[in-house]
Length: 352
Image (cartoon, rainbow, N blue to C red; front, side, top):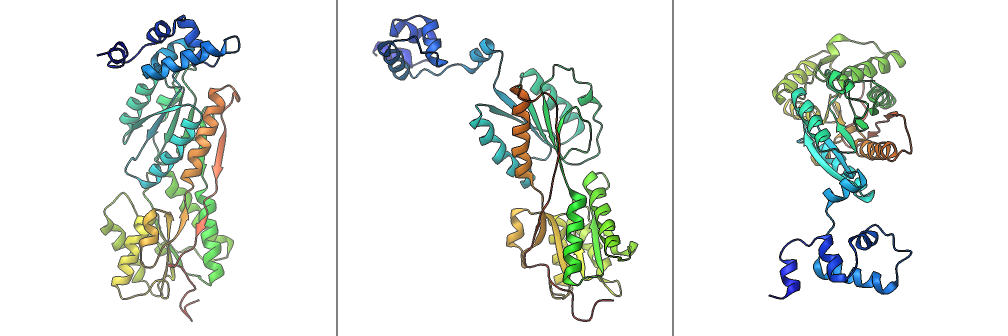
């Protein structure tokens, strides 16, 4: 085995490069950090060729010790199985990489998981943390008690309004107002809502938007036109709530579901009852999961802009980490309605 082969059998060090190139470690370091103004072309080429032959890769650990920087962003995902959060990750990772930051991923499905994930990322000395949250009402005391030396955070969809952190909220109220506007324009007057779990802020906001939308158009809020649409419960629960609405006389001409999964359960229940969508009843979901375009009919839904939220989180975090901005920012993103086949005018003669 040649000397070069012996060196490349293990991971080469900066000392190996310096020795083989006949220069000091400092000179090699200058090349790695692009400080080559005072260096001759011949020396630069010799060092670059030695790096190539030895397949030398700088140690990120060593760099962090020198620069006091890990160039790493921690990402905590509350529900890794949720397709929406995966969409956000597909945006966050390449954006961070393009800014020369690595991603350290952790999941947290409970409050204790959250604490452990945050503590782990702090131990790893990440330079910032992005938290992709559900809107569950949880205790944020442990976050507020973090020392001032803790890295900046960007919280997406968190049920808190603390201005210590960057926060990106979703405009659930505005989204429901827009849905009611759309349905009223189509001619609907009896509009029902399958509301989400009480443990989520988004459920409260959507119910509030629903009531405000009815009031805006002088439509009566009917208690029996609302029923549980808990997407955390088995689909059977949403099916039973849908049957309850279908058994009303007169029945609603449109149903706004808590999310796309609840909407899919409602659609199946409606079709099994011998009714057509949207000819007999319109169904609208929330989330815009990829499966919406595979349902029959395809599902009209409110799109949660989680990809845009991921982009905003990276930008806000990097601005703080680099010192470009000192204070945290609160943003609210609009949630557009995506019109597909499951919505249409009410049946002829059904308006009150």
